[in-house]
Amino acid sequence: MKGSTFKRCGCRDESGKQLGVRCPKLSGRGHGSWWARFDAPPAADQKRTQLRIGPYPTKAEAEAALAESVDRTNKGAPLGDRTITFGAYLRQWLAGRVALRPSTASNYTRHIDIYLEPGLGHVRLIGLRAFDFEELYRAMRQIGPTLPARPSQTLLRITAARKDPAGCRRKPSEATIRRVHATALVALGEAMRREMIARNPGQHVEFGNTDSPRAVVWTPERVAEWKRTGKRHRVAVWTAAQYGQFLDFAAADDLYAMWHLIGMRGLRRGEAVGLSWEDVDLDRGVIAIRRTLTNVNHRPVWGAPKSKYGDRLVSLDSGTVEVLRAHRAAQVHRALRQTNLVFASVTGEQLNPDGVSQRFERLIARSGLPPVRLHDLRHVAATLGLSAGVAMKTVSEQLGHSSIKITSDIYSSVTAEVAHDAAERTAAIVPRKIKASNSSVPTWCPRSDKSDRATDGVSHIGAGQEGWGGWGSNPGPTDYEWYTSRIRWCGLMLGRLGFSDRLTVSVPASAATSRGRTAGLCPPCARPRSQVRSRRVLGPAARCPTPPDRSVHQLLRPRVRKHFAQS
Image 1 (cartoon, rainbow, N blue to C red):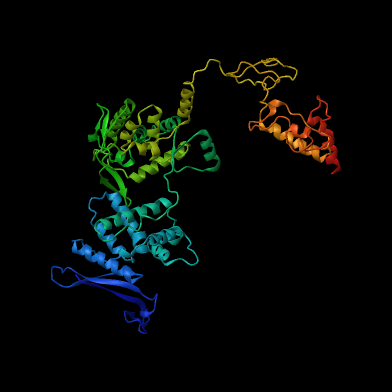
Image 2 (cartoon, helix red, strand yellow):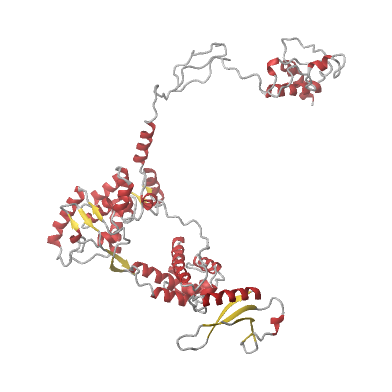
């Protein structure tokens, strides 16, 4: 298989045509790029096929890429269309995905139509780089009712692809940008498996903090803040008392059984709306989740559960069974029974999932309770189960999660009652002989008390204490180095104040430091007293005239004050 390398540039002549390999500047260094071409195996019509690869900054890189491409072709690797654009490839990839759920296919289509194809559809697939995606997401963060003074071409293309009016444009959230990028990663991963590209250029794109919001419980403090400021949390969980208040308020609502079922057993909205009486066994207290009813482009669409773990059996408590029995009895004489749905309109037609969520929000607004979403009732169900001591694995299977990590990290919230109970049970493990007292205990005793165990004036003893020691009953060690250091400092001060010619300080033998310094020291130089007595340091006035009962500090105190007052 033959191949060659050549150099070309993008310069144009007077008519606007590219000069290519005819540019006279190609002989100059740094002008143009290197390409390679080789003959591919003939197609079914036996026509010659020649492929080009590039550009490369140097001839050596082009030759290396040529050798690699020829070797892969000789080994039977598929030959992709190296001229295909990213937009054209996305259309081909999406058309081949036949096993997608309707909601997933709708999301992929929306991401491609609004962001990926307008922003990067013109770039060749083999030419995609990480900075191309970074530029796209930078433009997405600039979307709004007003655009920057000098918008980029990418921003203009993606805003033109949106159908909303300019005054209604909203900036996509970071979560939306991450979902768009996830769509691009899936598509590029398939291109790698087909060997159309060597690596996935979107793998190294960095994002900010896009962690899932942590569910918070509506504690009295958060409720008071919400009433004062109107601030609400993205994911909030009712306490058991608040959920009970809502059920009492909505007891007369036609969909009361749905609010009860979702909050107690944690069904998804689509699972509850699509539930059929054929999948409900009230005698055994079990319901089977077999299908869902979700909204795709604002239209109800029937589909399978979200995952294989969503296809499950959910056990019912006796209270929920009685609620469903009462709901079915009331439905018999109110609905025309055109369908066998558990939750339907008065005429027996299927409910719109979005309409169910809006009805739930209106009920909350009238009840005066802190706001939550309908999906947050799944968080309520998980929190109630864990608060009741149900195992995490059981709660995870009840909610239809693929692993208990999702349940523990996202859906479980700790209420104040559970936290206090855990604190009490933890503290109860520690054995105690003397009961702790909250009374204040004095931390001093009179100076006149020299006893080793003074208790005068102490009315209460803290936990684990028998009494307070008397004054001086626990003197500090005398062999610390700070003692000798203080003596040295005093010696320096004596030298500055005129005592160096007639004073030697006697240090107790116990004051020798751990480094083995001599106990008797001369203050000016801290040398042994034996050298002072031999008159090798201070001369004839080497003996200390200070009486034995006077310390160095007592001698220094008046002279130091006078010295600093004069200075």
